Structure formats: C-alpha cells, structure tokens
Image 1 (cartoon, one colour):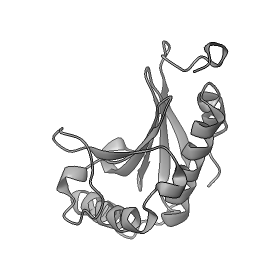
Image 2 (image 1 turned 90 degrees about the vertical axis):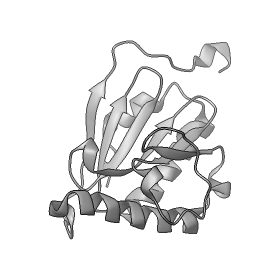
Image 3 (image 1 turned 90 degrees about the horizontal axis):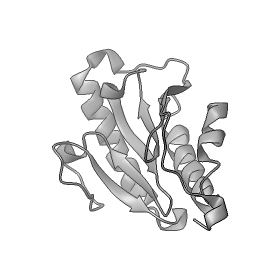
Image 4 (image 1 turned 180 degrees about the vertical axis):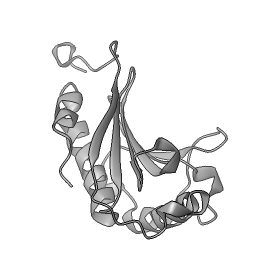
Length: 156
C-alpha cells in the first residue's frame, strides 16, 4: 500500500533519520499485514499511525508514534499480549511500546510474532475482522491545528 501523500508532509519537519526510520517501520507492518489499513493522525505532539483491519482505531493492533529523537512502535492492547519476547514499556491500562532509534536494532522476528498475537486479540474483540481481506487504505483521520514539531532551523 502506498502511503497517503500527506504523510510525507507531516513527517517533513523531522530529521531525515527519523523520517527514514518511520518509513522502515511502516513498511515492516504493511509488508507483514498487507490487508491492514493505515490510520494517520497529525497530532499536537507527534505523528501517529495505527494499523487496523477496519477503518476504526478500536480495531487497531499496532501503531507507530513519531517523535523528534525516536519512534515508538506499539501495541494498542499490548498489556494483553501473552507472548512477550521483547520487553515493552508503558504503565497504562492497555497500550505498550518499544522506543526505536535505529531499524537495524528493531527485533523483527520477535515483533512479528507479537503482531500476529495482537491481530488475534483484535479479531477476537471484533469477529467481523476474521479473514477480512479488503483493499487496504492509508487514511488521514485528523490534523491538529496547533503542533509541537522539530524546528529544522533551530537544529532539532
């Protein structure tokens, strides 16, 4: 699936390394689960992308959150994962993540197994998603008017 053209605009204020890392993580997910939709938020403090077999955030199984110095790769129901070969961060009720600074250190096989379990959790909560093979879409869900973004002129 091609990314929504606006995604490149949303990532433009970030350092080239962060932009490339974001796209590597994005490609990892979309290659692994090509039937997933990409739901994009250009939020106040981060660009976020959730991956779901529907067009609803509640059905998302994983996400990417882009910050100035790193990118978080997370699981929307990470606290419910039973197989956790990778130590996840987060103390909230559901969401867990890892911070990624370089794709070469991203534990792909371990995360892949966790993604399959996360998809199973999502499908269990919404059985309409089981076996769903619809055409995937990259959709901008919202754009925040006010944003905190790196300022390339200030050296961020």
